[in-house]
Amino acid sequence: MRKKRSRRRYEASFKARVALAAVRGDKTLSEVASQFDVHGNLVSQWKRRLLTNVSRVFEEPDDADGHAQQELIDELHRKIGQLNVELDWLKKKAAQFGG
Image 1 (cartoon, one colour):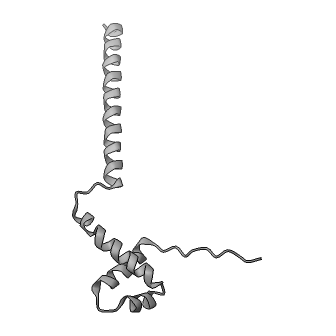
Image 2 (image 1 turned 90 degrees about the vertical axis):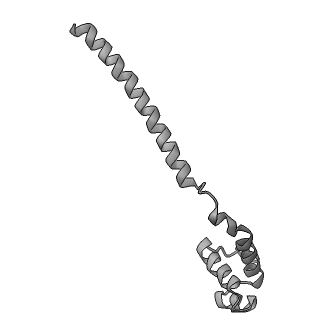
Image 3 (image 1 turned 135 degrees about the vertical axis):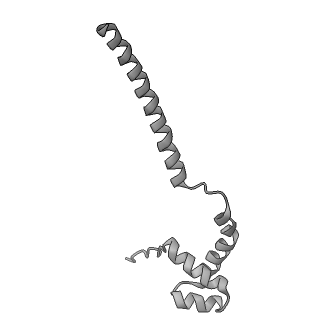
């Protein structure tokens, strides 16, 4: 019975280093592949992906952190509105009992 081999998974930072080394052009793709111990096809794919997506670096920031921060701000504004309504209600009730 043969054991099924699982694929190696690479972190994004590793892929970026390999792709940048390939883009630099001071070494051939096969030299970069042997330097980082990956297949040459992966180096070509990561280099192509880097070059096609490089313009995103300079686009408007539309990242998850900005979206999460905006959601937090919206939630806090809702909470402030709720607390203002409750405060107005308490002031009205206090005026009825106080006098």
